Length: 630
Image 1: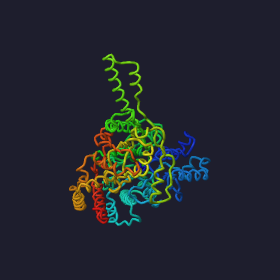
Image 2: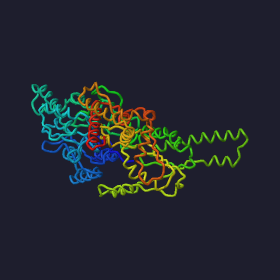
Image 3: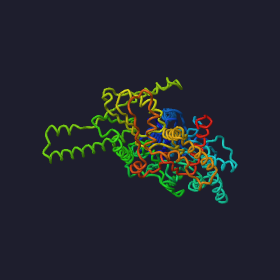
Image 4: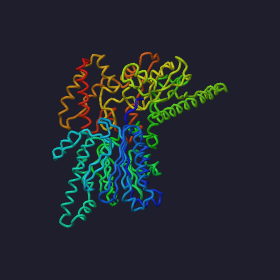
């Protein structure tokens, strides 16, 4: 119920014809730019902190700009960016230009378009950190425009490698480090081609030969194997080469579409389907460890850069981050809801007559549909069996039939996110009181102290909104019992691959497990985990494992959930509160093709993620000890 920051979103378009083609067919030189705008708006959910646009023009005169970039901060960044770009184009009189003039001179029009939606997760904030990043050079083939949906877990190692090569980066962030690493390798590729052609050609033919023969597969193959993390990385050179590469485990998503007019890449498949009017089958998933590369002259290659690793496609992407309009994701979310049916019915003692079913927030609606459909199926089976039994005994009367027919689920819209209150007061009870009013409730649908209230959510991570707002609000309806159901399992571990979950103490499940250990005189478990984590920080990759699992090992999922409910129930709520979570088995049954579950299971896909977990536990333990809590 508290929103997680989404992974970033990417959008790239490569036009396969000159601008004149699109002007003749679609009546505008801005075909690519308008499509980019739509793709970014359709992925607005993936970046509320900032956005950026980059454009590369293949045809320009020396002394004229050929790489444009526009960036902005805030939730309205997309509108601000295009609100600046389109007037600038109009002021230049692009629609009055001839095709040749447009190709040479029109601003923000070109053959390569790059868009980025940003959420900072573990990195720094501010306009200097908004993608795309640009590495400038007087030779077009050495200019590099880059953006990505990624988080690297071994930035220190990559940073050391580029410093060892003689570079002196201006800033320390994973984006800058990757940009400079790629830029250095791109420089080497330029030097390789220079040495190859210098005895055969003179400038400017030599420069043209270098641009025409850049091997981005070689550049990516020399850099990407060092990256540890989840990523869908996009890049374009000033001379017109473009690439998108995906991590070997497929942690971050990437989809592409190719026809005779465009090459398109985005973070979500329905975005491409909607904006370009394609079918589901026409949009392909970029395979883990592979890159789609488009050369200066339009040649397209989908190549394996690294051997794919174990499938670790992010399950949270399917549960929460991606829009539910994707055909597969829609079905998966319905299955997630359906899987919870038995646990929910046990919780309310099968008493549907005195139970109201609802969901919060809107992103949980599809899973809620799955839950409700499954309960309906169960009720239909019960009705059929009861009618058949009464009929066989000769006891089926019109009155009994009417009574059976009238047993229906009570599905209601219990909570409405009325307004987004701005909490100017930064702390204290007044702020908590403001937070409690972010949602409004529907009165008159609950029988006081008699009805159960079942509310489905897509995930419970920190529990802050649940404690400060949701449970207080639902408590005002005076139900006998409140059952909060999560379509995701308990979030127990930090992410480190692009979701804003990096500190162990954030997680309600972790706090509950620690509280149980303290209550039961088992603090020695916390001590032992600390010693193991500290010793493993300097261990070889082959020796790494996850000692933090021991924090949970003594307790069942139900015991941890019960403690979470106790800790998250605010004073004044008289109803019994129960939390029900998806099981790991239920998750993998529903989302079979995206099994990445490290935030639930602690099974990290890369050594870098595991090392960051070890450090997170050491930081947690030492903070607790300093504060006298251990």
